[in-house]
Image (cartoon, rainbow, N blue to C red; front, top):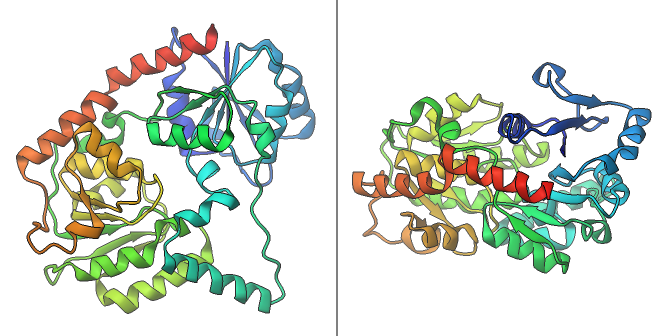
Length: 368
């Protein structure tokens, strides 16, 4: 039997659906603490651990399973799990990105000069106000080396994890949702607007200022908007990006500051013929897949490992460094041929039936 350990997140619901049928049946425990509030109504079939007594009992039962799957690695309780799992039990880690790329000794390498400046001045403000600049919690590297499998769909992510951990960790292919779940009712829809999407979240690695400057270069119709998702992340950064967005783009700047249901958010992507993702690290993968499926013209930084990944699988995708500065590039949605090419590539990797077979392979491997 496999045990999945979750914290309250929208991704947990996808995992529960994926591994709950009669063939791949697994157990699920959602661990809550003061930093991870639980909406218990979303997890009727999941055991919820809320206090130290329950958690200690959970740690004592870890040896009863063939494998433990940790979804993301962000919290002290996950470190305790890593240290408590007996040697005969496999440990699998669902790679989230931020749990490794966001580590203090790594993150700054993925920040543009503008993002580093924002962080520098924010730290100066904190010091002047008498507030300490303390790093976020990180699981010690020695605990991470206990992990047997890294679950990701991006080979470049696995290569980075393997190099960083310097361990014998092995790779298993995994993604939380199929393209059918990602797109929903828009599976047969196509991009039909002239708006622009910049970034995917209120995080420094989004390199917003670079993206906003690129969006400013694009010649857009008068009514076109530049959408910038800022619904989750740090409040100080949201204020800074909102200020710069209005300064650089005026009334075109349209921040998305509250959480939107997937269906509503996808409609916004559908209205964007241009999608600019200025990250230097793999990020916003679901947004990119959605945009490519709908026929948006997606621009990634050449420093982002997702660019060679998409080119390798045969997707039609563009670079920010060259194509947004190239007057010969068509700044509009993809042609029908290009859109259908992207859909064929995406379906071959992320179609519901394909992903089911890949998830089955995970279960078979971990149950051995």
